[in-house]
Length: 285
Image (cartoon, rainbow, N blue to C red; front, side, top):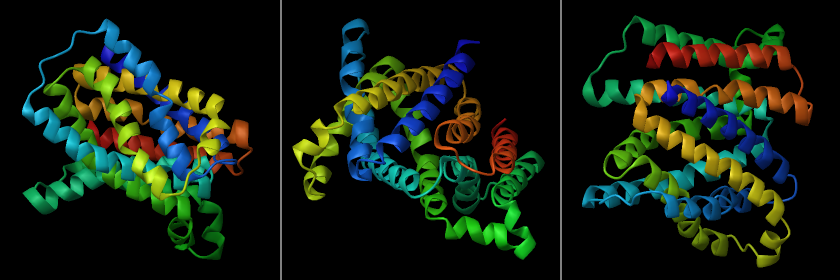
């Protein structure tokens, strides 16, 4: 089942990229690292164009790309601010909310109601979020939920999940109007160029970029591999299956946060992230 293998590889490289970005954010601003996720991957991805057949892309592909670019830039900027503000184990697990937002928008816009497994999945995601701060329940049964909103990184990552609920489907459509290899090769390079005006707006100096080129390339390599496996997986299996497997990065990021950043309360956070992952699987599969 190569599609599932690709999705698993995408999860591994996504969590690796998160850990590298978290480390880089100790010395660089969120704006710089957001751009580095795109720019660092660009030389690796553009090189793959030498080995892939260029598809005949239609007008719809460019429309989809134009819709994706601002949404993706917003998402990664929120993402990096979240990682800078809070531990990996209190931010990345909230990406589990992406399918929940999809259910909500489908209900509001289309009148589609979730089935029993969908409702059970939403419950598990909520329970998992509760367990991330369960030690606060001694101060009141609702304190763990209040703590989620008080944690800046968690709030920002909830915003990322909302944006991703839109971009995951737009990305699938863009692949259908081009090819997985082509989309993987050009998407992040296009984003890196589109991000340049924001660097100027943010007052980023060239020296800030030159000083971190080595870690930027490491981030870029992991992002390039993630993009390669992500778009190949999404071309082979249903979006719902791909996202379910790729969301293993929730658990992997919690483990990496404990191993490399000595984040505390790993037991309850790992259990919470596992429940949130189980909720994702119930909703999507």
